[in-house]
Image (cartoon, rainbow, N blue to C red; front, side, top):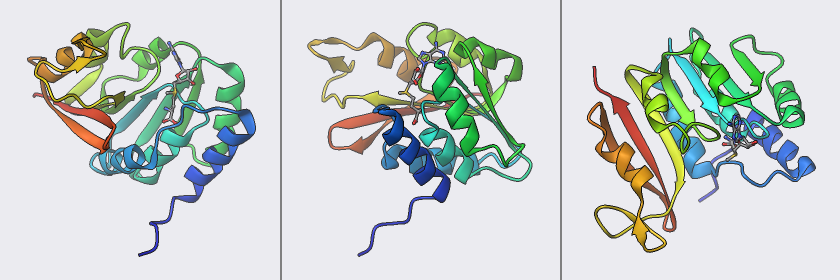
Length: 188
Ligand SMILES: C[S@@+](CC[C@H](N)C(=O)[O-])C[C@H]1O[C@@H](n2cnc3c(N)ncnc32)[C@H](O)[C@@H]1O
């Protein structure tokens, strides 16, 4: 059976990643979930920390409702400038340049793909930026057969924090046999 088509803007952001030698873009398995989350909040405020070349942004954009807006932040000025070009024709999208904390002024978020800044250095600050019912998406975990989850022989305290947070309903989802993501919804 044929591969499912990748949205044109995702392809454009992937080409930009290739030109810039950027190797940290999200994989399509994660991208499809980003599109789904965005589509689930058609009037929502959708956020991303760590734009990179805009691949994750483009997946979020592919599910973006007409009444929604999408804000993403990247601290690398060149990446932010070039990624902004991928979305220049859509006023629902803002690409900010600087630290992830610039996002705060746009919170609360109905979807937050936390992929560069915040995830590790301020996990409670990340949870605080979610609207009630807001979805949090974190990728780049390694599946673990143990509870609490372990990574490289030690308890993965960060993953444990998100999976057991009292304000979140959270689940770990396999994205490939060797990678996983955490998806969570903030309780009302
Ligand atoms: C994993 S990559 C992002 C990939 C992108 N979200 C995607 O799905 O294609 C992480 C990005 O976060 C950026 N970054 C890291 N720390 C940051 C911070 N504190 N504030 C803003 N951007 C940050 C890095 O420069 C890098 O481009």
